[in-house]
Length: 295
Image (cartoon, rainbow, N blue to C red):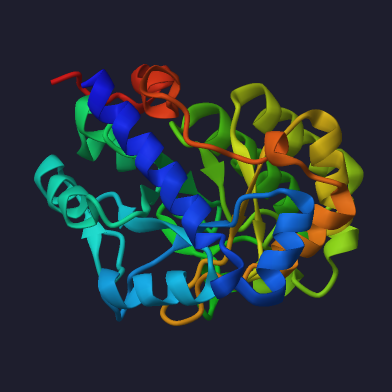
């Protein structure tokens, strides 16, 4: 098994190097080469497409993709939701040998109970965000949907932000995740003033937790977040970063904002997320918290 894992990691590294060749990447690739950074979009969905079509985009843009399918109970409504070891196994087999990283986007607090620790350890990484949030009745609410004010208490916006930040920290500390995605995104009632709501104190709570728990923070080119101010505090805390788009076909791999922030932060390879070896994956380190079995 160790030899197989090593061979897979070497294969992906070689694939990433090939995809970074200037023949595909244009100006974006030249920028990344000047900074000596690998081009990986860790937040790619297959919604409304196929892996082969998505790989065409990967080659055209010179960007290696990390594919994430939603994972959790069937209460989560998405085109595809992986909910048990068998479904996860078929997904991993479909991506095997395609030159992509294989991940999931975890949904809600109970997602890991759907899978065995052994099955989850086959993933390269797990990504999660804070956009599915506890409503007034304790049930999951997608904060981007219309009518969120009716299901989530946001009348006192500062009080909501304190709870929202605490929820970010809870996910980082308790969930077996490697990347926190869509970081600093705000729901509609608050989205007009990031600076007022994402105060330095709130940012520090999130980034210090991420640094302690070895959770990378996504620099999202899809949302153009977090802001440079947020990212500077994250870098000072020792956080690793992952580029991402939350892209659906054909909009994955457009990493302009991620690279702009990387340039302004002076990021190097050492500042960027790479999938940890099996024994150091979050699903191994936090399996008791996740309450997965070891079958």
